[in-house]
Length: 308
Image 1 (cartoon, helix red, strand yellow):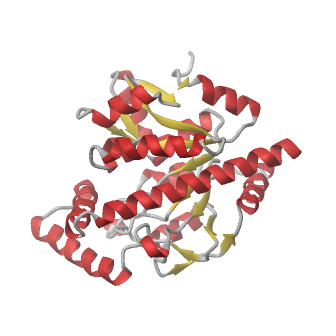
Image 2: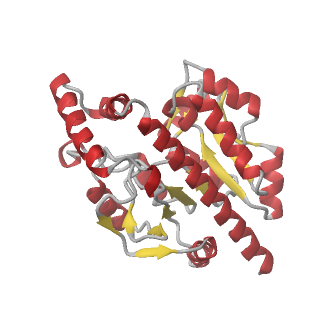
């Protein structure tokens, strides 16, 4: 029995085979994360920014049931405007594929497909993690266990601010997933540069990050390397404002009886409405910074391989 076919675009396949820099990009940021028409603008801008620096972008999603690494511009345009499409985590991939549906891939599914295609670097916005109350609800993102078993490098601005960051960092430690700050030992909180939690390691250049990745691969370890890249302090939401906002958001969710899977979209929408769209601009700045750093690390990795 053969494996389920994964379509890898020609330019991505050629770049991987040649050892050229490639960066994977997830699709949920434009299928489920950002409002129209900004979603399409941000998706195409990310690809163009990478190409302008000599890096091949590989936007990943499920198109008409086919897991695709390197969506075409036309496919990105179609998915960004589609209403009936799935948010596909790793568990959902076989179902979405079998039913021939469109799907935006989450961090977990994107990391899996990137690794299958031979891509080593993946840039996203924020990671999933442990939700408040998880000791009773067992509500934690599949990103955690998936990244414990897939040796990619993920550049993010931390986990989403609505999550239990302390518990998430503990889970990363338990799962043997290294968390490394980029030019910082303070773990970022997505909308803010400093979540209040210290991490053990930092790197200060893309070349240092590449050395860590090469060491992980040399040891044949199975887990991801997480690079925590904080948003520019000048562009973050004021931390005290965010803290007060989250208090109001949780209170409103409790008043409405919103729990479980419904909490995340409600809280994120509350934040966007309460800040009159300023949080959206921070979100986009976070993504831009991570895409840029992902390209720099992919380039450093390609150079290291070439020298070797």
